[in-house]
View 1 (tube, helix red, strand yellow):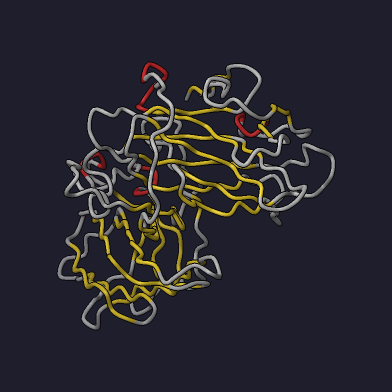
View 2 (cartoon, rainbow, N blue to C red; view 1 turned 30 degrees about the vertical axis):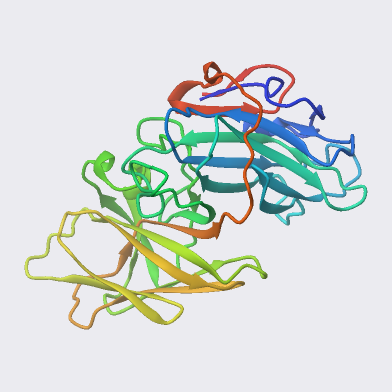
Length: 357
């Protein structure tokens, strides 16, 4: 996947290379902002022929680039509205921090700004990406086709996107994520095992999950057991409506005649859905809206009493919705000729052009 240098998208800050070489090429450089202006902004083009939704993701890796061993905290804003507080202190040294939203811009550009909120703690950024969403992706959150009547006037903040039973999945080939979404590798509960699963034509599924997510899963060892998961929210997060998306595919040898797999989904102790699965069929189940409050959401996938087959889960996404309570202003015009492959605008905050494949 190609990366572009950021010089055509921002007018402030300075580029810097971090000391230790990183496996992800885009994380070897960053831009920091020592000029103490109220906002340090990027202006990103959109295809504004009609209302469209975008995945917008900002990446951060401190890497002690300044030699101070003091990872900063600062704010991230999009089109004048609060997006996230970025805390770059992490016990996982060398692991990038990402903030991602699904967002509907209301002009020809998207304005992403970094704001200093603590004296002496300078904002920085390592990567910035926008990916246009197309049907049939996230239609429960963002209708297709979008219009002024169906515009959700909200941002959907990604809480987690998890691949169960397999490794992290990113863009890389036909079986990876075409939209460069990052599916982190999930922890397999003690009462579960990793299993190989089978999926049909993944391009027809809602949200276009990558085949590498559907082709591995976790399954309970005993058919009577439940899959129990927790999702961490920010302590001060909520109450907000949340969207829970579950991806199911089933073991290659799952062909027992007369057996039944029925799963009940509980969120914070309340049953939200019951699904009876057909054999050799994959499913995408979206549950919304569910009001949640941090710091933890408890999820249980439990077999219905008459179910005879194990409970299986391939992947999961969780988003929280924040309504637009601020006025949005159009940013300066940027030509759409700067869009690059796969409807991406992808910035590597580097001194020169880099190509990543």
